[in-house]
Image (tube, rainbow, N blue to C red):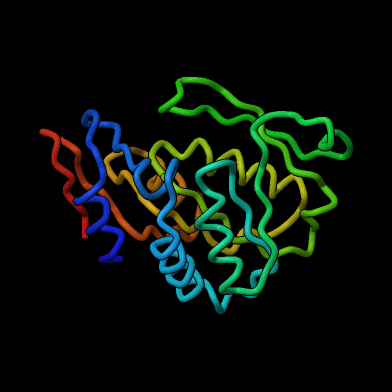
Length: 190
């Protein structure tokens, strides 16, 4: 997706050969027009999969997931990273380790929103080591639902997440695939 790649080049900040900061448009401040285009791109890729729900993880996956849900006309569920007073009963629970935060979170979804007959599209902001994707996959499996695809805004292809998901048979589509962040420069795979 050229508009996304352009935004990464213009506003992304390479913090190290492992970390890309995109808080100017994706995971702190949100560019609504870009999010709309991202939602349209995901809808185009996955429209024919009979999707009934989109699942993401809070917080940075919510904007692209909502825009895709709007385009596809389906509800969006976001896994919460912490327990709240209102999310207490009949929960699907998994654990996710965050590379950028260097901490483990418990994520949860109410089982009443995710059913065995659902056909689910996962959407997330980043794919690096695949820990968030695996946590979401675990939740969906607990519900007995079917995963029809995984949509990723930015993939760090030099890390192992994509390879693991491919080996497990998941269909993964990334809108921007980064080959390298070496020497402070973003290099795209395709």
